[in-house]
Image (cartoon, rainbow, N blue to C red; front, side, top):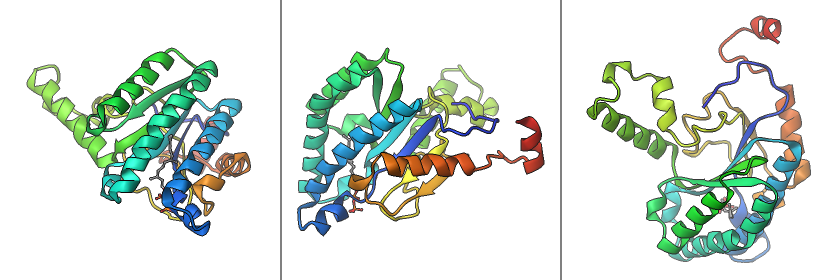
Length: 247
Ligand code: FPP
């Protein structure tokens, strides 16, 4: 993962916490799963938006390590929804040149879903218009722990010296290390937190929070986020004057 040192008016990588499906459904006196189904439509619109705008990568938090604690009926409905969304959407995504991948502790999912995720990943692997990463059973702390495990194993095999471990040598073991670091984080639904999403990867990310519930997010909302991003000065620890000189 690379960290840009130049001022950029458009993000290369957008990461989204898609919050508010449950409340959107409750406002309509419908079950929470109705909101998740509406959320899939908003996912489709966001993918299309990013593709048209030439964004390189979009990462979506679809199911956190903590979401297993939700009522069993909601967890099952979400699994079913992921499976059906995969069946329905992959042809179009592939046709549009979208590369799809899944990040998280995937072994926890039912075999059918895992196979479907693997098939979609392999089928779209060579696509280059936009990389969509779906974070499922993902947690930022889990990610750092799994990277640590992997680097400790490499050290035990003698491939790396423990004393030489730095942020740069650990980074390739983390999820999304093949992509530029997310430079715009969007959370919908009114909460102002990161909720254990990409803790390491968001180090220098611009944060953008909106009250709009995820199913209501459309191109105009995302456009608002891009306009806001374009106003931000990204300093990476430098002074404003240094950034101005470098650009
Ligand atoms: C958060 O809203 C949303 C989720 C935990 C699930 C996200 C899933 C989707 C948008 C649908 C499928 C996605 C893909 C990639 C196919 P919430 O339930 O916490 O809402 P609340 O805060 O209003 O209760």
